[in-house]
Image (tube, rainbow, N blue to C red; front, side, top):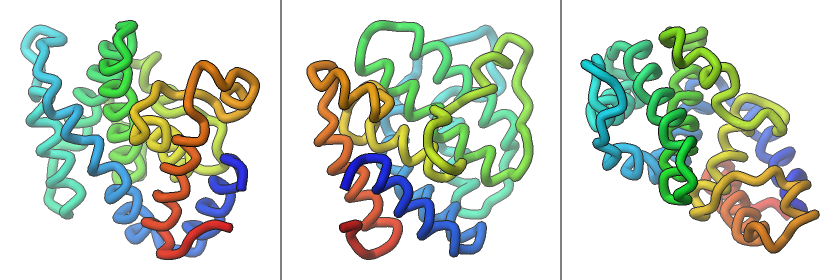
Length: 187
């Protein structure tokens, strides 16, 4: 199957799940990249309400159903995503992609637009690429590249310029995530 076909299969499967089940399954896909964000201890702004490691810990609490200040966590994750995306270092881009995926998941959990400061509004508009068919699969799309340790590529661009990325690795990761979400493989 092609990359976009696997995304469509995932989207169809999760469309039949209730909201909480979708969020839990998506969090399990996100969890492996959170350590990367948690290790990002660089100071990004003066007097942030949360450190980056604290924001990740709070996100984990939110996933467990505990009450947290989702706006503050979202703000910090968005800030990490924006600041780390501005660097050319591929590892920092992976931190950025992981932070953006986590912030987007938090937005789905909250079911509303979350607060950000004026300086982060532009970063907050499109936390994840908008090419997949749903909010769930847009996060999965970003995670396929992140979990295969690659900077994000739109799958059509990856087909056109295979030397710039490893599309087969991203497809394998996407297929593995499909198995994790549905319990069966996409064929």
